[in-house]
Amino acid sequence: MSLLSIIVPCYNEEENIADFYHEVLKNSAFFEEKKIELEMLYIDDGSKDGTAAEVKKLCAEDKRVHLLSFSRNFGKEAAIYAGLKKAKGDYAVLMDADLQDPPALLPEMYSYIEQGYDSVATRRVTRKGEPVIRSFFARLFYRLMNRISKTEIVDGARDYRLMTRQVVDAILSMTEYNRFTKGIFGWVGFETKWIEFENVERKKGETKWSFWKLFLYSLDGITAFSTMPLAVASVMGVLFCIVAFLLIAVTIVRKLIFGDPTSGWPSLVCIISLISGVQLFCLGIVGQYLSKTYMEVKRRPVYLVKEEI
Image (tube, rainbow, N blue to C red; front, side, top):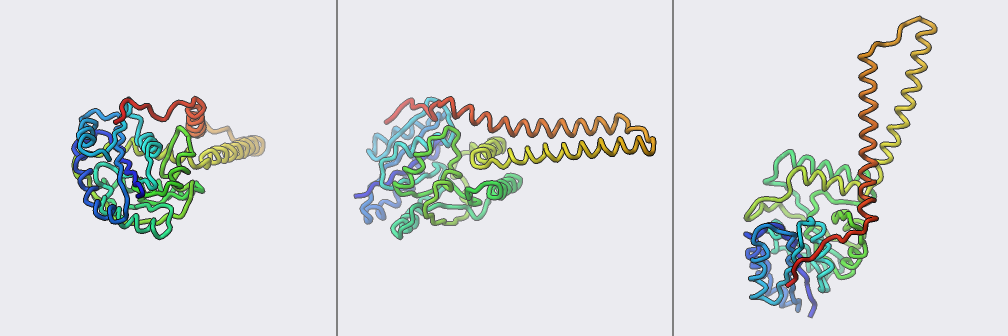
């Protein structure tokens, strides 16, 4: 018998825990036919509601269900990492508890593993139900990342992914503190089959990802898998030095040949403001990379476990 580990990061998903469990079990006949046992790992990311209590009810009813609770909210990336470390299966799949990752796709995903693929990933072809401005910036982020990074990140990619043990071990070998799983999936490589599906809205509850959180998450992705912003800052510095020397030369020539007075304070203030803004922008870029380095060298644990059942 093979073992499939279903990893479910949860944060304030009390309403969806039982529904998700029953939806997954609708595929039980398929897995029994394939001689695959299941284990369901709910990773409670410091929820403030009754998420842990709901999972404990399932643990009491079904020995295949396990709970790992964090001491506080460490973020979805930490929950994914913890789930992969805890998973014992020959295969592992990451799924969201809100049922936006359709469990009905699991049989199809496993069929591609049988064909020899190392992992089977999913991507949304529509963003129905999302605000227009959010969808626009999401697509912009993917286009930007694929231009400035050597690691391919597919537009609309979900964390919903079925992997062999070899792929899981490769991901776990990357022990970095600042984790960006979408980039890690692309960086480790392996032969991946992509499955497309239309966006599924949450069954219950509200999304925990605000626009601001997504923006900060995108910055993590850029700094984790590209050094292009540092190169941009350097190029801007060189360009402004060249422009400054040219302006100095023009000012001197005008004064010596034409006797024109130098420009007044309004133009001077504009120039100083522009250059100061560029300097602060470039300093911010350097600061982002420095902060990531600072967190890495401190070697803090990615997460802390409060309770395990």
